[in-house]
Length: 387
Ligand code: SF4
Image 1 (cartoon, rainbow, N blue to C red):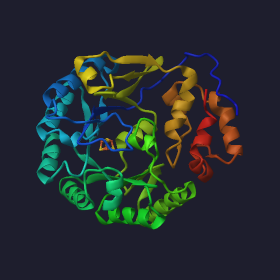
Image 2: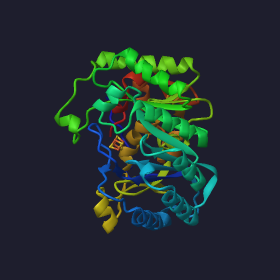
Image 3: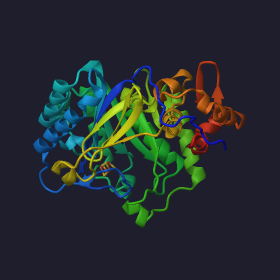
Image 4: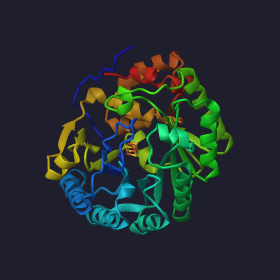
């Protein structure tokens, strides 16, 4: 493997700044799921909604000097379970965001919701607050699986939540998981078919992995073998392809016009402000690219622990870019590397050639994309770009 060599570390020259998005983290859930390694915390009692919204807006104000004059292309309110917040709180949040930053016309505004925490009136309230896309954490339509995953909802509640979301929103994502304890390929197919039948125009399918600091890490359930999971992945891709879903990112499938613009901005190495407990952001300035990070624990965050900001070393940028862009099934335009990292294309030329020779990558004059083999062995492909 050829390590990526950046001749003059610290030399980043960005001719244009990328699109700017906003991520808002709401860290509470009704119950912590045993597989979850997100920054999510079981709620105890009433949530400090007003206090938290005020703190989010204060964060935004603190970050404004680094993005003066720039417009937001999308907002994503994720968690945790943001649908635990009332529509009035989401309205206060989005009004506060608009008072501080201009949103592009038609900007995508997504809110994550979990079945069991939403009903039709609540969805209407979120829509009236300005949300125009909903992402629902369904995971499975099999009650037994939902029980094993420690989810608080049933398959019936998941279907009701999707119906209610589709009554208020044209753009709805359903999150599914596969490779679940005791699951086989036909059970995974049944979940995908249920999501299609429920009318979801966007489906995300993630393989269950066991992460450190989770209940499953200490008490691992028996998961399907690696080959069975690979078969499930192929089946999901084929099934959704047959139903006219475009597979546009490793785990994301969309009907035409339904691709998630906020996530596309991450994968295209765009910029984003991150506000809320544990949120991360990435901001490009003409001569450097920085990351910022907020205090993880909600209590420390609310107390006002300062935002940490670091510059991303230039030698790390090729890997960080590829980590995102190579998730895109159609790859990326060759010009995007220099545009987003501010580094000359020559710093990755050798590694690209090597990956191409190994059959992990395909290139033409316009685009660079992972090959079928590269998609299956994405980690091997990414290793080529480590600093
Ligand atoms: S609902 Fe989602 S964020 Fe909350 S604990 Fe479960 S997996 Fe994690």
